[in-house]
Length: 368
Ligand code: NAP
Image 1 (cartoon, rainbow, N blue to C red):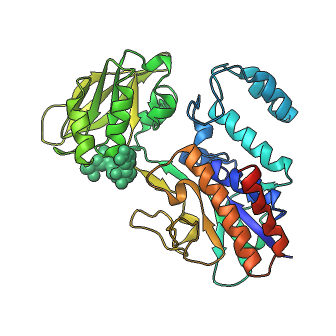
Image 2 (cartoon, rainbow, N blue to C red):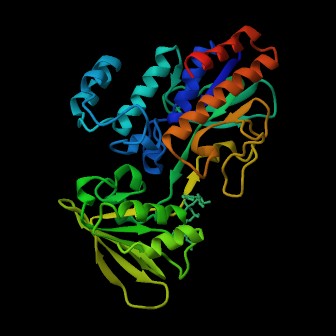
Image 3 (cartoon, rainbow, N blue to C red):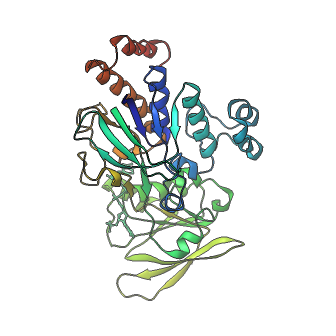
């Protein structure tokens, strides 16, 4: 029997879709991604980008506080180490993701720890193939599919940058900016778009100075954002400049960057305790090999306004893989919920499930 719904991806969008699909008796199957060195390097391990962050201060429902008792009571014994390591500052990214995963499995979601590497949306039921990284290459048939594979932050690709990831190099100011190592210290933000300005502006609350390193003489950011950067006295824009090397040592982590001019000026070093990348994201859609419509940046297109439908009927997209604008954990969770409801309604419309199942919509009134 084909699966009613297969969910690919395991960030906030994937787990929220699974929670809703499971509660609608769709018996969802989640491919959460493989635990492999390749995925570690590309930032695509199970549980998504949040699993790579520390405190999450902006996911509603988790104010600062000691969650260790709650973590112990809600997670399986295998994850009690999270409670033991808990920092008492509210929820961390990995904690939040394990809680979401647990909530989905509590309602009967089945999980495969592997990547989907091939899809065939040209026939029904759809056909999906997994990599077999977990020891079993699977061929799965699915009546509907929710794609929630997220996006990965782009890095410069320097070896020295890799060395100082989590020791000063970050691609998420909102996640990491408030950490002690970045407070009242000079920081570097790389990029010239809205994200770079937003990150620089955000970090200027904590930093002594923020060097905005941009490779051209004009920001790509919208005028209002560019003006904000120029007006902020703590932001020093270094025009026509690129990062050549990240400097530091194992003890202190990142201590500065070596900058290279694009207009022939001599290289120079700048002291900093952090370097934040804001040079764009790449959606994780390679495995789809162009089988769904994407926008010019490669993000999956929603083909019906305010619905998660893609260009293939029965395939839905949620979270960062279809969002190059908001990219927040709570917006991803929201669109994951939408995708599950859209899939449920679509399956009912195809008579694949009984209409009564779509009655779980009544939950919207009482719980949604
Ligand atoms: P973006 O607009 O694509 O800008 C990326 C920036 O990174 C560009 O300035 C680019 O330089 C630079 N860059 C790319 N690769 C680089 C490399 N290898 N080395 C050095 N610099 C590099 O991306 P974004 O800022 O993430 O914005 C994405 C979308 O979200 C945009 O549509 C944006 O408007 C929107 N957004 C809006 C807001 C807001 O309105 N508050 C906030 C965030 C994002 P070049 O300029 O030379 O190409």
